[in-house]
Length: 640
Image (tube, rainbow, N blue to C red; front, side, top):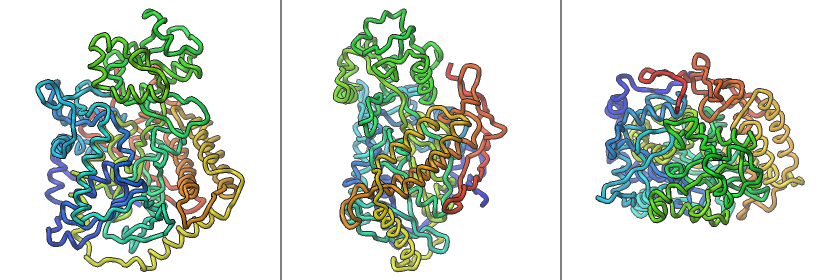
């Protein structure tokens, strides 16, 4: 199948404006005749559903949480980027576009990224109008701070609670539409399949997580805003419920999967403390504005944070400041993460495990004062103290990289439509805006851009040519999809093996982290491929799923999700093995500069890898969307 990205003609800065004008419209009286399903209620899903309802469409909104407010967008607390140039420090739409392209190691699509930078300026106004309490300076104007990968201050923030406050804003807009009757909200409901009728996405099959009831829902278009797949690694900063199931089931129905190996390892996480953990906690990247990262120049085994002050300044290695003087502690996440790993590999890591580095605020507190630092990061410091017992006001934090965000996702064209007509993907569920590495504070930007300012235009262009007729849920394709879902559930319940779902998930996570984590190599990837194939075979023979379907059954929920994670893991390995260059978060040990930086191979790998499902047990087919760079020059990244 030939990939058509549908990028508009014309100069980069005019593409989106011209595309909106050329897009077909649905008149207000006809919008009420169309139904749209939106799966997910994070920033992308809530903003899209609210916008569709405001426009007059009939919307069905689904989330597996008990409330849309529990969507994982709440965890992105550091800030949201926008090219407002309020600081008058040289920012612009083009600079945000360039920083995002460069930060993604030149593996993103120019047209989509420029559109993201364009609409970023509108997002802030939208959120302020909703009452989001952004930080303000002494004069009452909106404040900004800097983030990794940029030399300007363009990140708007609400203390260390930005994601939470933005989600409350989107939730209020969604709630307004629920109250008006334009949006039907289905909480505690999980999508388990997408229904294709005559080649178009026309609905979904769901499971009620309280009763176990399998239901079908019909619509004229379906939007997936279901987040990323970082939990394939078991331990990640994602909420434990975050999963790939909706996107993966869509993939198996014909939606190509783009760049699955592009995983972001976040450098600022609380280190692993033992086998008992079920997830990891992120300390916001905003902390790197004032915190200095260091390790001892000479290894000190088991160095505790309480003893860090005993290490004299001349015996400390502020390695990011030393190696990258232009950006210092604000290098992009992939660079900071690999350097932390390198320090620990050299034996200079700190803490009981030696897998940690210090993030030190002593100088900032001395310079700016306790109250100033508390005003910026107080809730983050409190969270760290509650988890670790250490007080960051008194001693440095200990941090280490962990899986955080996934740049890969369902392949979409410029309209955010997948390769299945009528099926859209928004936010982290798609691949489109971050290349091989996402800059901090850009996830919130993309989610709200897609939901508020892109999909409301592009979905109308599709629906304008759709008949008003609604497909009943007793249609044979719905019945077929329901049967497949029920059969799969019964198969999982009937295995009655010896190993729990968590046992399999942990084993998968260990394979993925060990062989497809911060560094990958040919031999390791081949080993991982064999291990995952064996794990999948054992899962379907030996997993133990307790209980029945007709009840609240978290063991069954997890089993469904882990089965999909295992299949996704195999595709991630294939993608990482195929891409023999290093770029952004994908670091192939065979492809690095003499200084140990990621080395791209542009003449071979300047493309989006879009994988096509071929059927159970068959290797997937690789399709390539060539990336064209007409407005930026391809260079090896340098943050020195």
